[in-house]
Length: 197
Ligand code: FNR
Image (cartoon, rainbow, N blue to C red):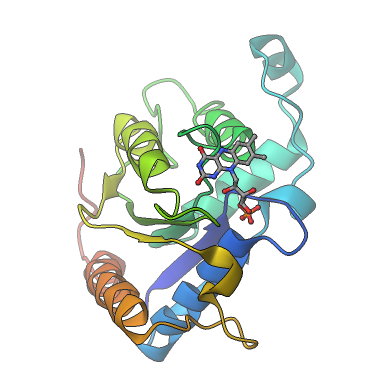
């Protein structure tokens, strides 16, 4: 079957550059035969700020998000850089999704998945400093992050009207990364025996 790739932005800002970038990467994945699913953390999942106390009445939104993430073979994550780090929106969503598994199945949502982590920012470095914070968090949960990333600087001028990348070299880099992700996701989607990690 064709792989399902979750498209996730770490920003809920209206007009978010990272949401635009995530969608542009999603379109590239679709062009390579993947089915994509936009996972809108800010609008579709009213997650409370994580506190362990709230786990006694595990939020329905967190259960829903976990199921949605689990239904993907891989994820594209476009994460803004806040003070050189991952955004609270994405960290909160990942924290909730790392909880609530039955005993012995810790991090079931994340284990064996693959993610491409990308970023964009109005600044020159394109949010490059935050990439490792996203990767570190995901890898701690058992997700394999593709070693290469794409960080798009100058976000104010980086996108065309239709949301695609204006710079063909940058578009080519992103396309290469997404080609790799779709390749891995396709082999995961068609693996006969689940991999126990
Ligand atoms: C920022 N911004 C920012 N940019 C950057 O390149 N490096 C940084 O460390 C930070 N730090 C930072 C902290 C906070 C709290 C905010 C609100 C913003 C600017 C940021 O890249 C810009 O607002 C982007 O537009 C955010 O991404 P979205 O919402 O457009 O996807």
